Every structure is written in structure tokens, then in C-alpha cells.
Image (cartoon, rainbow, N blue to C red; front, side, top):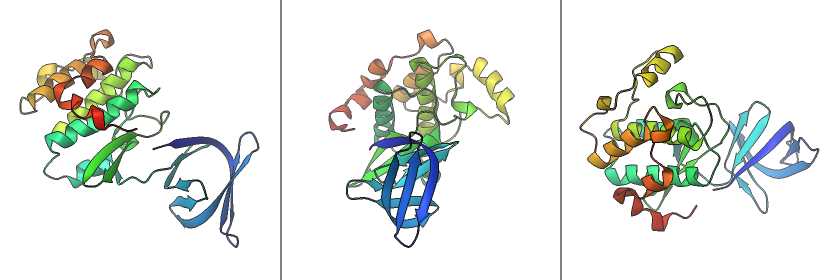
Length: 229
């Protein structure tokens, strides 16, 4: 999956010619043949398909591979929870993205799920979208350690279907994070995933697990040969 990031000044829709023109910050015009305009721009040119666009402030982000759902909507669909293999696949894909990217804090809405041949894959979305406070650590800086914390919260959601915190606002979440006790992690969670969450959600960023080490976890390592992003 490729994400194209354009700083868009203007969007010009020419309905009779079925064309859409994206005018960028540097004045370059990017042109796509319009197929449908329903909520998002779904368009196609001879070399590029646009499956989804996201607008954030003055930025337009273009996804060039189809996706089934966000992780948030997938969890809502799975009333009985995810299988261990599915959890391992999703968190492996997320960590692989983090290994080679500048993602810091992210949330369920910014993880895209793609279904291929009865298998699911996950892909991080846009690196600078604002993140839900429940996924942000208390580090105060953007670093790989921050992204490991976010991934730990995601893994908690994957294993339990709910947030590690039962909070109503930002202040309560901040206090809960500062006082987060690893004993709050349910014993019912798969033992290996529970140990990963404990490692990933250490308050001290210097003590958190390294992405490379987390990927060497046995249940994740078996997924690595098949990762093709």
C-alpha cells in the first residue's frame, strides 16, 4: 500500500469531463479521471487508482490500495473477539510499519485492514493525524518509544476488545496513564501477548520493549516471512 501526501490548495471538479484536478502547494496540477464521487473520491487514472482520500486541515491524503475497514470497525464487527493468529498478524504488520517509518502516536482509526484470500493484513495510515489521548504515552516527546506505547494499547484492544482505561476525559486518561499498573492487565489474555503488553506499556520509555525484540516474539516471528509491505 502506498500513501500519497499532497498539500492541496484547491480541488476542482469538472463534472462534464468526469475529471478531478488537485492543485498542490507548488502549483502543480494532478489530474485524475473521476469514476465516482460518493463521500470520498474514488478515482482512476492510467497509472493510479484512488481508493480513499482523507482531508486533514489543508492536506489531502490518498490511499492507493483498497482496504476493508479500519481496525476500530473490525473490532466492532468481531463480536466474539479476534483469533490469536489474527491478533499476531495485525500487531506484526503494525510493528513492521513502525520499524521503517516515522509514526509516533496512532489509534485504531488510523490502522487499515485489508482482506486478501481469507487473510487479513494491517497497515498504518497517516503519520501526522491527531491521536486519541488514550493512545498517547506520557513521554512528552515523539520517539519510537512513544510508538511502542501506542502499539501496546492497540494490542490490549486486540486482546480484550476494549481500552486499558475507563475514563471520561483527557485529564482522567492522563492520570490513569501515570498510575497505570501492569497488574491491571487481565490474566485471561494470552500469556505471550500479556508479556508483550507489559513490555510495551512501561511508563519509563527507556524500559519499553524495542520493536526488533518484539518482532522476535515466537507468535509474531512466524509471520515475518510473509510480510510484503
